Image 1 (cartoon, rainbow, N blue to C red):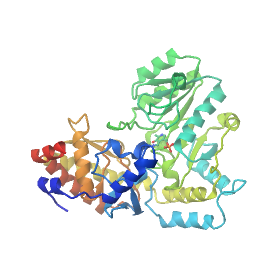
Image 2 (tube, rainbow, N blue to C red):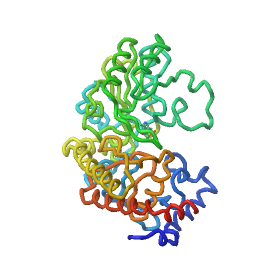
Image 3 (cartoon, helix red, strand yellow):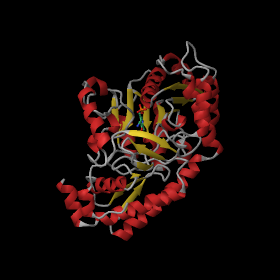
Image 4 (cartoon, rainbow, N blue to C red):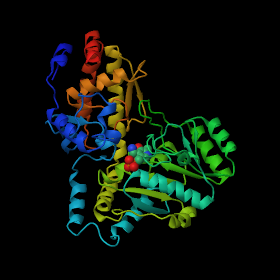
Length: 427
Ligand code: PMP
């Protein structure tokens, strides 16, 4: 649907059902919708609040609006929504039961699969969420080293637990007392932090590339990765990779293979189950004893269905080399967005690995242009998040990407219109 600025201003609300439901939610659910899906930080009224259904690389909201899905559930959907092979494997398992008094044999199959896929893995454990695993991995490092400090990158996201949550509520100073920050891609900052806390450092934890919200993504410098490895070796600290967001999207063997470095433990989640709830940590044999001593369990952590889904997802990721497809279509998206940005006079910055792409506008530090751009694209059925890196999936085709680029180009042209900027700003 092509519109000019005036039409946009006169549009009837597109989300009556979303709005009504959100109002009901506000009465009985603190925050209505909380966490990363809260509508508060996007553009109120420009995006749907509730989803109804999805298939492949597209989804439909509860008001019947459809979108090319460039968020893929914020990462888990790596193959596509309702993937027939994964869902068939999950259904088959479901018919035999899911939640038992014991693990099912699939737990051993899945551990063997993780070890065969990930070169540094001599063992594997499973949980449900990313936070379960990042927190547990830091405990294993403390158990192994007998040291207290965990070094992390300032502004990096590792989950919702008190030691790392970006939230402010309910925290006490002691929660962060043993957590020390250094600066992404700054080798000197790594060296200095190791010096400051020498003899008390249990681990360094990093994401394989830096992907802050409201910021461009940044790939790791070789020197930076080398410095972390060296400093960990000298100190006897563990090098943990939080591959929860990027894992199995860049390389079927883990993102360290894509960037070329050697961690000691890796936490995976999102893409490993194509939407079924499962996470994992793998590690080198030296840390297996410590891993066996840190209590690890949860009500649903042995469930068989997500393990069946993960086995099938990982099989397909490797069989079809899904990361190569994501990289190819991601590069096509980058090329197209850059071209449109130039052509329409709204130059863009493409950042991150193409398989996990992100775009911002030059000279847009507050992401205001980005918000308007995303709102316009959403109106035409393309879901680009305004301030969080995007995700692609195997079901996205080159034609889908071309449609995204076309819509983006129209949105950029509209962005140039002063009138539109005034209209939205005045709302
Ligand atoms: N680390 C990273 C890099 C993540 O992207 C996330 C989730 N967005 C987490 C940790 C936490 O995962 P979860 O929300 O499943 O606890």
